[in-house]
Length: 219
Image (cartoon, rainbow, N blue to C red; front, side):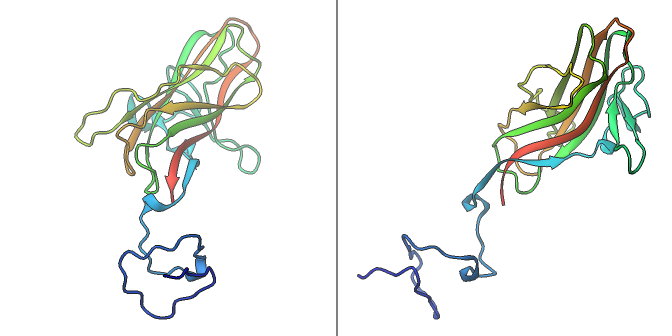
C-alpha cells in the first residue's frame, strides 16, 4: 500500500474506522468544525494563571461578612484604593510595634472546566511589607481544603510551609496544593494568613497586591 502525501486532501468520505496518517500535519483549516476532540488529547498548558478578585474574599470565621476596610482584630482589611490611582488590595494595617499579630481572609475557588484532573495546582500571592520590614518576622501562609459537597472537607492540601514575605519589595509567593483527587469543578475553600511580629516604631504594613490560582489545563 502506498504512502499518503502530506499535501493530499480528501474530498469524499473515508469509511475506514481506524485510519492512521503518520507524518502528516492536519492544519486548522482541515479540521472539521464539528470534530469532537477529547480534552485528554489536547496539549497541556502547565500552571495557567487565573486571577481571584480580592473583592471576593470574606471574614474567615464569618463567611457572610465582607472584610473590613482596614485590618483589625484577626482580619485582613480590603483597602478599596482610589480609582485610577491605586487598585484594591489586602492589608493587615500598620503593625509596627504591635508585637506578634496574625490576620486572615478566606475565600472559595472552583477549578475551571479545562483543569487537567489530578495535575498541578498552586496559589500565588504578590506581597510585601510596606513601608518598612518587620524587625522580627512577617510570613504569609495558606490553608486549603476541598469541599466534598456533603458538608465535609478534605484534610489541608497545602504542602508549602509559611513563607517569609518580610521585604518592602513586592514579590510572588507560591503555595503548592496536593492535587490527588481534584477534578474540574472541584471547589477549594482557602484561607490566607499573615503573621507579623514587630517591636519597632516604623510603619510595617503587610500587604497583598494580587491573588491567583495556577493549575495545569488542557484546552
